[in-house]
Length: 216
Image (cartoon, rainbow, N blue to C red; front, side, top):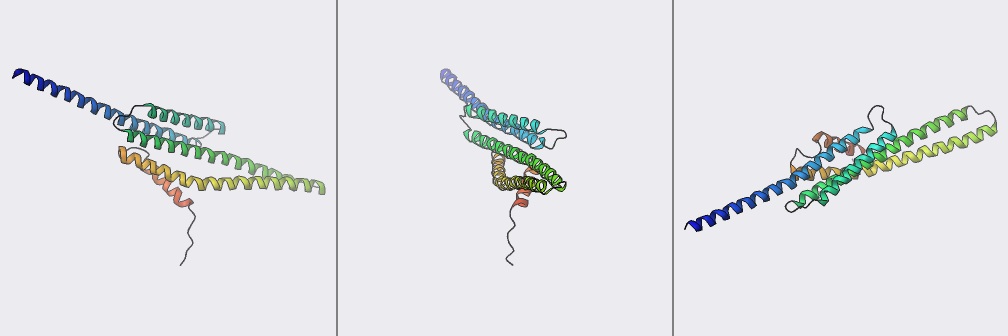
């Protein structure tokens, strides 16, 4: 009888140990997903605020933007290389979220490039306008007028690109918000981006959407 009880006790101990190990590995996977998500939130928020920093140059901004994307790529690779035996869906949610963070950073990068191009184009237009006003001979007027026309066309082209970027950004932000919502559903409402950040993005989408014509 003692042997039977000893055997049962050993089975219970072994079963409890296996259950404990399973719970540990399960919680470890979820913790990795959450930790990676929150790190990407910090990286993305820092980068989106970078161009508003006092004294930052365009070159410095591009360098920090490239570094942020590189870090996000490294985090995605780390998630994909990890063995997910218990919560593969957590990995999928986290990877999708990080991919959307990359999209948002790249979109901000494209917008910043165009802001710089627009600033340069305006300077060229102002300079060519000044030179046109100072022209004396018909030949000078004709040549400088052509230069002014080219500068004007270049500015218009940049502004058209800016409009296209804004249109494309709406869909990208919507996908980003959806990914953040998936994170909150999977890991808790306190994970992902702050509610104020998401509310600001939704407000931006509403402000940039074409206004529907009043049929009344």
